[in-house]
Length: 365
Image (cartoon, rainbow, N blue to C red; front, side, top):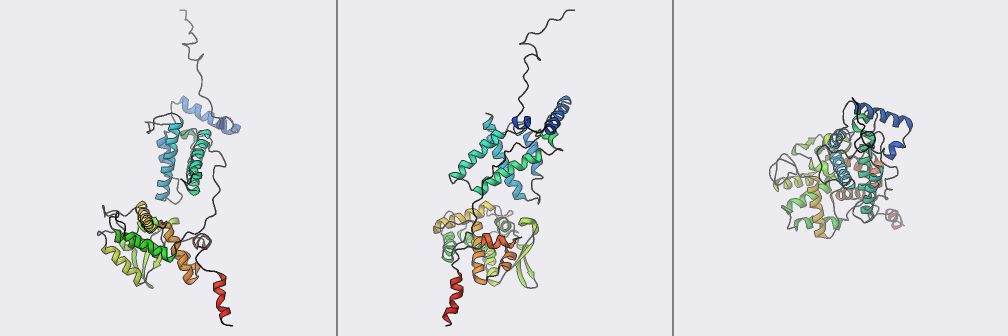
C-alpha cells in the first residue's frame, strides 16, 4: 500500500511551532535550564499537567507565614489575587477567574515589571503608601521563590523566579505620629457626635480603650472578657500569644480608671464573650476595618487625621512624657526591640527639649 504524504498544511511536524521559551528561562544557567527541560519532558510524556493557579496559591498560602499569622495569610491572598487580576488583563483574558486557570507559571518578568510600574504610579499620586507597595511586591516575590524551589518546580512549572531585582522602593524615613492632648480629646468628642455611627457613645469608649492600653488593632479585636484577669499585682488585660504579633504573650495592668472604662463599655453593647463584639452579630468580634472606621470618622468630625495605630503612637508619646521609662513602654506595647519603641513611637514633637529639662537649674541661681 502506498501512503500519500501529508501536505504542509495538513502535517503536524511540518507546521508545528513550539511555544516560545520565556527569556528568563532561556537565559538561566545551564543546570537550571536543563533541569527544567527534563522535568517538563517527563511530565509531558506522563501526560501530567502542572498545578492550576488556584492550587498553587492555596498551597503557598499554607506556608507563607512563618508564625502562622492569619492576618499575613489574608494580606498575601489579597495581594496575589490583585496580581492575578492584572495578569488576566495583560493576557487579554476575561476578568473573572476561569476554570483551571494557568497564568502564573512559568512567570513573565515583563508583566511583573508592568504591574509594579502601575503600582508605583499609585504611590507617586498618593494613592498607595510606599510600605504597602513594598509588601505587595514582597508577596509576589515570596510566591515565586516558593514555586521555584527544586522540590516544587515539577508541579509549579516555575523553574526560576521571574521577579526582576530592584523593584522594592526605598522606605521613607519613619517618624512617630501622635495626637496632642487637645486633639486627642477632640477625637473622643468627635466620636460622640457622629450621627452615622450605630453607637456613638460606644465608639468614644473604644477609642479611649485603644489609647489607654496602646494595643494593636488585631490584638484589640481579639480580646475576650476572660482576658481581664487578676494578677498578684492587681487586675490586668492578658494578650494571648495567638493574638499578638510575634506570638509574644504580655500583660497590661490596669487601675480603677481602666476598670471603670471597661465597665461602661460592657454596658454600652450587646452581651458577648468578646470585649468588642460586632453589633449586628454579637457572637463575633469587631473587625480591624470596623475599628479603623470608628477612628477615621471621629477624626473627621474633629478635623484631625486619626487612625487606630495613631492612638498606639499617642499612648507611647504621652507615656514617655510622663515617666521617661522606655523599658516600661516597651513591655506594655510588646515590642521585641526597644529601638522600635524609641525610634518609631516616641514623637519628636512631644513638646519636650533639653532646654526645658535644664531650665530648673537656672531657676535655682
